[in-house]
Image 1 (cartoon, rainbow over the protein chains, first blue to last red):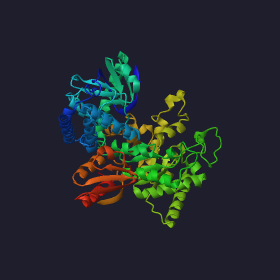
Image 2: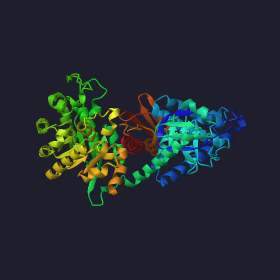
Image 3: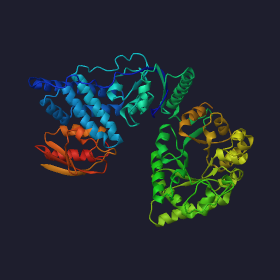
Length: 538
Length: 85
């Protein structure tokens, strides 16, 4: 049985299922007598003190072990437990002869309902209130101990919801994974799971009920699903995934922040390809030493108008700031007949990949190109940006583009706007550009080889055609010859040359690319640590 | 009585960590302190009351009554308007 939810903490796990005794037990005693009021008020205050003490102890322990984020959750919970408004509301109810264990739950529910009605983030805080008031209630009923006491073999924990106090009380190593019916990526269970490195799938909903008596559970916290009572094949598949992931993590930890240097002492810059501004932070975390290809198409997609210069400026600046001194190569717009841009006047084309696209369209459409160049020039003041032109076929393309960039710079300067230094380079992706590399190098500050398109154009093999698999590979003598020619031209001119196609992240291609003179590799961020490892082993 | 108007600084508004720190600071003053937002007035020493009360950029007023009222509004207004805690 498959349970689909939200992947809240990556990783996979397989193991026996553990279902903790559900939440807060219902108070048996709802009413008290007048003569008990004083002693019950005292019991309530003692319970608050005990719970707050335990919470702050856990917080201190987490802080001491370096889990600052989680320590803060507990600090927040201590304040909730000791809340004066909570206390006075509960004490008032005790005064009307309600039992303290019932009163604290009722008041907690009131606050929780109010928070839950606000927004998704506050709904997660509502769970905090229920958690804390539930603990006080349990303390009053003499059941302050954990529902996880019996968890003594490493297991996958299945629960409707999990409170931070629950996750903190699980003995180390006993939780292989979490599957919850409720929750979102911002729930504490998700935050805790991520910080503990335990895979979690949250928000599987009512489907969880059907899985509660499962013997075993497999879960994939990256994809966001779990399987109750998996068959042998599934278990084997998950174990395989688990091993691969553990290996990947070890590589990540070891290599993400090392410099990639070959045994001959050649330093290879390993950078990330970004498809949108929001990917920048993650790429940096994974050890990117820069951005070798920042695609700008995302700004133009799924909308009916063109993005303004200011909007583009914000997006480019965000990435520039994230990377600071590290270089970020912004590639100007590369769309073709497959994307209809308003006011640009594309015509239907028989062969969009051989059509009016990339720099060809940009040069013909100043109202499209100039705002982008202006935004890049302005954003360059906030970091280290470079600009790269796609689909260049000859020196004239490059000269015209450089002239337009210069024109934009002059205009901005006369408008009194702040602009930064921007080097310009060519994306080598047409065979023509590779063949003319020596000429192009005279007008460029760098080259970046887009192997995906270079392969398709060199071998005349459509990237999307399943039957041409054999010819969709950069490891082909014709492609390698063009890459070599490009590298020789770059080296002769003293400019760096990178590869930003898929080949840059392929362990079997990296040695070949470096051997023929590539100095920079740019790839999807998850491949970075592995690429550094490969380079370091050369 | 002392009061001061200020703008909420933390990205995520008043809750979680900023809320806990604010409460801790508020409890150090003997004065009664309230936060006023629009027509709502809540106990500034109650994390449950202040959580989710205001978002980043919204205006709130901190009002205190008691011996250390002046100092309380000054400290707390500064704390809540800072964007890092």
